[in-house]
Image (cartoon, rainbow, N blue to C red):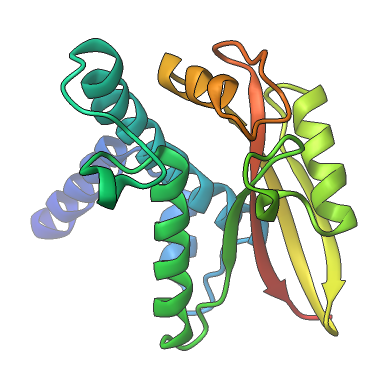
Length: 201
């Protein structure tokens, strides 16, 4: 009896320390446990956004803007410079897609797009992308969720605002010769992250 009580107490302490509710524990232990497609998209974006923000603030902004010891350029290999945050994001996206192709039941894509893209390939291509980018630009702090069918496959599509989190983001975009918009300010919505997850029709 003491063993059972101690085990229960220990489990409760662990659950509280991890911030997990009893309902979540019960759900996770079930063989039929599922995560909603919206929760999956939100979780994916949380990781992407955190990684990108850390690279932008801790690496690029510090070394380029503050310490001025290296540059960040589009042609970073030729220039022996840092890759731009947007490039790092794209590299990660491309690698994730390739790795996901080799895994069962793992299928999603994500891209960085903008209504004012420096690279025209990053402009929205579908109605959902255009509406999503417009929505997050006009409704700061809110995400956009919808479904769309592409090539006969139905997708859950989520769009999250991509904001200028560091001075280096804003100055890079505003000074680029190909930019269609050169008056971005720190904290402005500069584009959006589009996450697409296939779902059953």
